Image 1: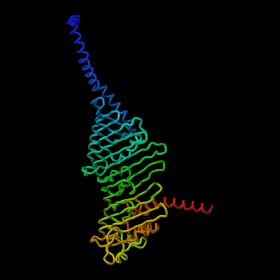
Image 2: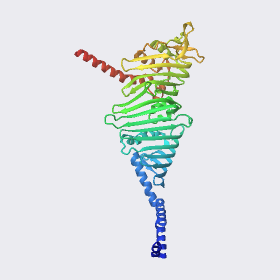
Image 3: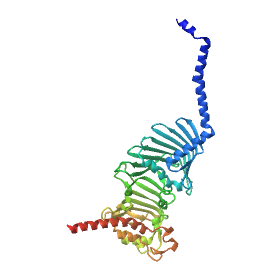
Length: 467
């Protein structure tokens, strides 16, 4: 029966069927792939691909995006060449990337960015790019991962290079989180700098929280100045090390450094050039040092509390400022400084603990951090100023005795008529570089809080009168 069935199919028919199967299963798919590949790289289709990607990225980022070339490597992988991000109005360049390798799936989008050049003065415009992504709850909850290789930030005294950086975006219906890890060229073997930005989407919890953690790798203040120009007054080499949290909501912003939080928060501003500080105008003290902030609560309403340590090395300090501090702040001075003529005094170290609390009745506590020998040969901390040979020049021990706010302001208040602590300065130097002197800065921080406290006292007094 099988032989009879074979005889029913003629030899020529079998050959025809084999040829047809070969064409259908081999030749036709090959031709389709070749035609598809040709169309993908043809000039007209390439122009359409470039235009489609430019439109997609421009709409998502809210800026003008231009691309030189689009390379389709697979159905889920695309490579973009010569990408530029520009201002949508004046077409000023924000950033340029040589190559972007883009892969995607249903749950993850991964982009590798090579040779990214960012214009530092335009970095402040980066937040609006992220704002639209952060404020909209995600419907697909698709994670986004960006890996940067060789990032250069231009526009400062010298370009700053970072060998790599990683950006992760985790969108959900309740919040959108963004985590940026930056590896420094000088500290490649240390933990990276982490900057986290979280937007909460709940109806009663629409706030944004920015946290900074840099336990081993310091963040140059020259990068932060593009977002907050005032930080440049710390000096070109100043750095941030530690952690802090900045929150935004409908009431404004709030900056917190809280040692009670887990992990413990502490922020150090190091390599400060005190000669360039805006609040140090005219120059009360010069030298290089650091400020360690262990507790801080500040908002547009003013300073609520701050606790920290200030250390300065190898500088000069105004003698008359020391004499005023002796009279107004209870600083102990040797006799030769109490009667010294106006001028500056060289020093080796300054160590000063300070604590300001304006949450209730305003209190200011000050004490020295350097060791000093007291009566009986006992060595204790309390010296706040040493000469270059290590001998004490000024001391303050009574940390528990608060300083009155008017006395603190009086210690920093310069004399009128061009005289600053009894030293004549040129009119162009008062205030130095057009900055406000320290008294104005202190009063600008304290006045809003004092007005709030004053209004609260009046409210309590009126309620007492009514009862």
